[in-house]
Length: 197
Image 1 (spheres, rainbow, N blue to C red):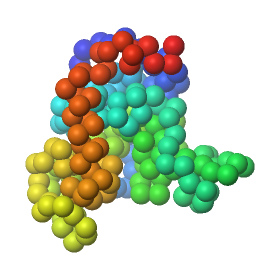
Image 2 (image 1 turned 45 degrees about the vertical axis):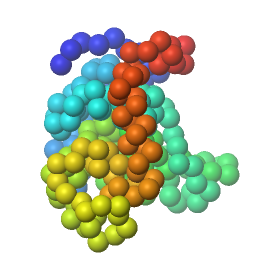
Image 3 (image 1 turned 90 degrees about the horizontal axis):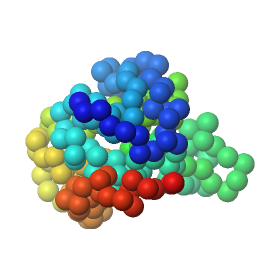
Image 4 (image 1 turned 30 degrees about the vertical axis):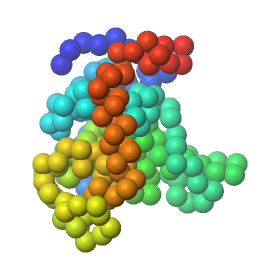
Protein backbone atom coordinates (compact mmCIF):
# COMPACT_ATOMS: atom_id res chain seq x y z
CA UNK A 1 0.00 0.00 0.00
CA UNK A 2 1.20 3.48 -0.84
CA UNK A 3 0.96 6.31 1.66
CA UNK A 4 -1.55 8.87 0.45
CA UNK A 5 -2.44 12.37 1.55
CA UNK A 6 -5.95 13.06 2.78
CA UNK A 7 -8.18 14.62 0.13
CA UNK A 8 -11.28 14.62 2.34
CA UNK A 9 -10.49 16.22 5.72
CA UNK A 10 -14.15 15.91 6.72
CA UNK A 11 -13.64 12.12 6.84
CA UNK A 12 -11.06 12.35 9.65
CA UNK A 13 -13.21 11.06 12.52
CA UNK A 14 -14.67 8.24 10.42
CA UNK A 15 -11.24 7.31 9.04
CA UNK A 16 -9.79 7.08 12.55
CA UNK A 17 -12.59 4.84 13.85
CA UNK A 18 -12.15 1.09 13.60
CA UNK A 19 -15.10 -1.27 13.38
CA UNK A 20 -16.08 -2.86 16.68
CA UNK A 21 -16.69 -6.45 15.56
CA UNK A 22 -17.42 -8.68 12.60
CA UNK A 23 -20.97 -9.45 11.54
CA UNK A 24 -22.88 -12.67 11.06
CA UNK A 25 -22.93 -12.53 7.28
CA UNK A 26 -19.26 -11.76 6.65
CA UNK A 27 -17.09 -12.86 9.60
CA UNK A 28 -13.92 -11.40 8.01
CA UNK A 29 -15.42 -7.91 7.93
CA UNK A 30 -14.08 -5.95 10.87
CA UNK A 31 -13.06 -2.50 9.62
CA UNK A 32 -9.84 -2.92 11.56
CA UNK A 33 -7.86 -0.18 9.83
CA UNK A 34 -7.25 3.55 10.12
CA UNK A 35 -5.65 5.89 7.60
CA UNK A 36 -6.48 8.46 4.97
CA UNK A 37 -9.45 7.89 2.69
CA UNK A 38 -7.25 6.64 -0.15
CA UNK A 39 -5.30 4.36 2.20
CA UNK A 40 -8.58 2.85 3.43
CA UNK A 41 -9.68 2.23 -0.16
CA UNK A 42 -6.34 0.57 -0.91
CA UNK A 43 -6.60 -1.57 2.24
CA UNK A 44 -10.11 -2.82 1.40
CA UNK A 45 -9.18 -3.47 -2.25
CA UNK A 46 -6.18 -5.54 -1.17
CA UNK A 47 -8.18 -7.43 1.46
CA UNK A 48 -10.92 -8.45 -0.98
CA UNK A 49 -8.86 -8.79 -4.16
CA UNK A 50 -10.32 -6.05 -6.31
CA UNK A 51 -8.13 -3.65 -8.31
CA UNK A 52 -7.56 -0.56 -6.18
CA UNK A 53 -8.26 1.79 -9.08
CA UNK A 54 -11.60 0.09 -9.74
CA UNK A 55 -12.38 0.56 -6.05
CA UNK A 56 -11.31 4.22 -6.20
CA UNK A 57 -13.64 4.76 -9.16
CA UNK A 58 -16.59 2.98 -7.56
CA UNK A 59 -16.20 4.88 -4.29
CA UNK A 60 -16.09 8.09 -6.36
CA UNK A 61 -19.35 7.07 -8.05
CA UNK A 62 -21.01 6.22 -4.74
CA UNK A 63 -19.94 9.16 -2.57
CA UNK A 64 -17.19 11.20 -4.24
CA UNK A 65 -15.05 9.74 -1.40
CA UNK A 66 -17.13 11.61 1.19
CA UNK A 67 -18.10 9.54 4.22
CA UNK A 68 -20.72 12.13 5.22
CA UNK A 69 -22.85 11.51 2.12
CA UNK A 70 -26.29 10.09 2.93
CA UNK A 71 -28.61 9.08 0.12
CA UNK A 72 -31.67 7.08 -0.97
CA UNK A 73 -33.96 9.25 1.09
CA UNK A 74 -37.30 7.78 2.12
CA UNK A 75 -40.36 9.14 3.91
CA UNK A 76 -40.77 5.79 5.71
CA UNK A 77 -38.45 6.29 8.67
CA UNK A 78 -38.40 2.53 9.41
CA UNK A 79 -36.24 1.99 6.30
CA UNK A 80 -33.43 4.04 7.88
CA UNK A 81 -31.08 3.08 10.71
CA UNK A 82 -32.41 4.48 14.01
CA UNK A 83 -29.45 6.89 14.25
CA UNK A 84 -30.38 8.31 10.84
CA UNK A 85 -34.09 8.83 11.45
CA UNK A 86 -35.19 12.43 11.49
CA UNK A 87 -38.09 14.61 12.60
CA UNK A 88 -38.32 15.88 9.03
CA UNK A 89 -40.14 14.49 6.04
CA UNK A 90 -37.51 11.88 5.14
CA UNK A 91 -34.34 10.08 6.19
CA UNK A 92 -31.37 8.50 4.38
CA UNK A 93 -31.32 4.74 3.85
CA UNK A 94 -27.74 4.74 2.48
CA UNK A 95 -24.58 6.08 4.10
CA UNK A 96 -20.86 6.45 3.76
CA UNK A 97 -18.15 5.87 1.22
CA UNK A 98 -19.98 2.99 -0.44
CA UNK A 99 -23.54 4.11 0.36
CA UNK A 100 -24.32 0.95 2.31
CA UNK A 101 -28.11 0.69 2.37
CA UNK A 102 -29.69 -0.17 5.70
CA UNK A 103 -32.77 -2.06 4.48
CA UNK A 104 -30.67 -4.49 2.42
CA UNK A 105 -27.60 -4.79 4.65
CA UNK A 106 -28.81 -4.75 8.24
CA UNK A 107 -25.78 -6.70 9.47
CA UNK A 108 -23.47 -3.90 8.27
CA UNK A 109 -25.11 -1.62 10.82
CA UNK A 110 -24.39 -3.68 13.96
CA UNK A 111 -22.98 -1.19 16.48
CA UNK A 112 -23.65 1.43 13.76
CA UNK A 113 -20.35 0.32 12.20
CA UNK A 114 -21.16 1.41 8.64
CA UNK A 115 -22.16 4.83 9.94
CA UNK A 116 -19.17 5.39 12.27
CA UNK A 117 -16.24 3.79 10.43
CA UNK A 118 -14.99 4.43 6.89
CA UNK A 119 -13.00 1.20 6.98
CA UNK A 120 -16.00 -0.87 8.06
CA UNK A 121 -18.27 0.73 5.46
CA UNK A 122 -15.97 -0.16 2.57
CA UNK A 123 -14.82 -3.47 4.09
CA UNK A 124 -18.43 -4.66 4.15
CA UNK A 125 -19.15 -3.46 0.60
CA UNK A 126 -16.20 -5.29 -0.91
CA UNK A 127 -16.95 -8.46 1.07
CA UNK A 128 -20.31 -8.33 -0.69
CA UNK A 129 -18.56 -7.80 -4.04
CA UNK A 130 -16.27 -10.78 -3.38
CA UNK A 131 -19.25 -13.01 -2.54
CA UNK A 132 -20.71 -12.11 -5.92
CA UNK A 133 -17.42 -12.46 -7.78
CA UNK A 134 -16.80 -15.91 -6.30
CA UNK A 135 -20.11 -17.16 -7.70
CA UNK A 136 -21.95 -17.50 -4.39
CA UNK A 137 -25.11 -15.64 -5.44
CA UNK A 138 -26.88 -18.31 -7.47
CA UNK A 139 -30.23 -16.79 -6.51
CA UNK A 140 -29.47 -14.02 -9.05
CA UNK A 141 -30.52 -16.52 -11.74
CA UNK A 142 -33.95 -16.88 -10.11
CA UNK A 143 -34.93 -13.19 -10.24
CA UNK A 144 -35.11 -10.53 -12.96
CA UNK A 145 -31.81 -10.44 -14.82
CA UNK A 146 -30.36 -9.38 -18.14
CA UNK A 147 -27.96 -12.33 -18.46
CA UNK A 148 -27.04 -15.56 -16.71
CA UNK A 149 -25.14 -14.96 -13.50
CA UNK A 150 -21.64 -16.44 -13.49
CA UNK A 151 -18.59 -16.16 -11.26
CA UNK A 152 -15.64 -13.96 -12.13
CA UNK A 153 -17.49 -11.04 -13.70
CA UNK A 154 -16.07 -7.89 -12.11
CA UNK A 155 -18.44 -5.49 -13.88
CA UNK A 156 -21.52 -7.58 -13.23
CA UNK A 157 -20.72 -7.59 -9.54
CA UNK A 158 -20.24 -3.81 -9.53
CA UNK A 159 -23.76 -3.58 -10.94
CA UNK A 160 -25.14 -5.94 -8.30
CA UNK A 161 -23.98 -3.54 -5.59
CA UNK A 162 -26.13 -0.82 -7.17
CA UNK A 163 -29.20 -2.77 -8.33
CA UNK A 164 -29.21 -6.03 -6.39
CA UNK A 165 -29.70 -7.77 -9.73
CA UNK A 166 -27.57 -9.13 -12.59
CA UNK A 167 -27.22 -6.92 -15.66
CA UNK A 168 -30.69 -5.41 -15.41
CA UNK A 169 -31.26 -2.15 -17.34
CA UNK A 170 -30.44 0.02 -14.30
CA UNK A 171 -27.05 -1.69 -13.88
CA UNK A 172 -25.73 -0.67 -17.31
CA UNK A 173 -25.48 3.10 -16.71
CA UNK A 174 -23.98 2.52 -13.26
CA UNK A 175 -21.28 0.20 -14.60
CA UNK A 176 -20.59 2.65 -17.45
CA UNK A 177 -20.26 5.53 -14.99
CA UNK A 178 -17.75 3.63 -12.84
CA UNK A 179 -15.75 2.71 -15.96
CA UNK A 180 -15.73 6.36 -17.09
CA UNK A 181 -14.49 7.53 -13.69
CA UNK A 182 -11.82 4.83 -13.86
CA UNK A 183 -10.78 5.77 -17.39
CA UNK A 184 -10.47 9.44 -16.38
CA UNK A 185 -8.78 8.60 -13.06
CA UNK A 186 -11.11 11.13 -11.54
CA UNK A 187 -9.46 10.90 -8.11
CA UNK A 188 -6.41 12.64 -9.63
CA UNK A 189 -8.37 15.52 -11.19
CA UNK A 190 -8.37 19.03 -9.72
CA UNK A 191 -12.15 19.33 -9.30
CA UNK A 192 -12.18 16.07 -7.35
CA UNK A 193 -9.20 17.00 -5.21
CA UNK A 194 -10.68 20.41 -4.44
CA UNK A 195 -14.16 19.11 -3.60
CA UNK A 196 -15.52 20.63 -0.41
CA UNK A 197 -12.66 23.09 0.02
